[in-house]
Length: 422
Image (cartoon, rainbow, N blue to C red; front, side, top):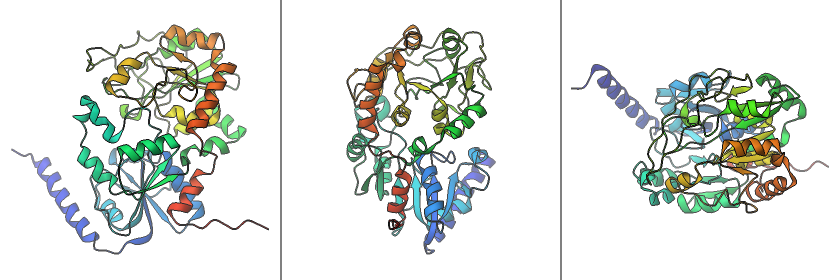
């Protein structure tokens, strides 16, 4: 028997949908844009950079963010927003001329003639995406491919960071949208930040000027529950010594804390592994070492771009952050103990661990001892590592130059380029 609360929610949804149908008959507002990121988690990623540049180049466009109620506390002061599912949300979705998102607007909406939808995406695809996931049963059973295609049908523009992404998006998200091979607006800051900007970010994080900051940012695993780091950050900090500090950034799927024992502002880590399709297990790391005071949980930090600017090197696995971080031309170490399991369960588009020019951004490690050694002997910043990084950057960052947001805003909002000064 339905509870009073469930009946109340049902009635509210019906009322909101009825109001939305009424709003669909209102004229479009030519100066309204609705932004969303990561399923309405707040101001972030490419939409955030587009919004910021639009306020500069097209101040007549009023930008409003769609945010879920549980993430409203993430909204910066002074940034207009509507709560997902509310009356203002549905009115904005019904009447905005411009829609910008890096994922999708939860809850569904009716795309109207005259509305323009920019899909910015939120990373370069190493793992299989969209229709390519049909080849992987564990992924396919969780996906609604008809819904994916319906969503793609709403796009007017699809943004690409590189030719590889364009080729993948065209295949896995087939549609009639226009391709925008213009680079990622979120990466502009890597070209525009000054030494003073970076020093300020590091100071706010508590990183001393004489310390080497390592950003550890692994991605989500479909075959694991909870955040299970493949290295012990405390051990890494202890082995490398007091001149190093380790920043731990868990994937946003896991909430606002990495849960790494001993890390500033963190609680205990989830250690549960899940049986993979091929019968293998993802192994949890050894019990965390005693705190060193040099491991910082930065999962809740609002801007991952600032963390990248603060870091002297990136330690990651299959995260798309590696493609963005390459813009900085700073060392990248791939730490991937579970490559075979990940490739089997998720599928990948190229062999990140091959060591081939253009495929691998730097040294590769599969054990904690190997990772420590890479830093001890200096391999992380060797000429060979720099050569790999250069080839990787040339392949995956060809459009990124600090002006991507301007190109996107001028194209999407039809803002003319200013004539050259005489």
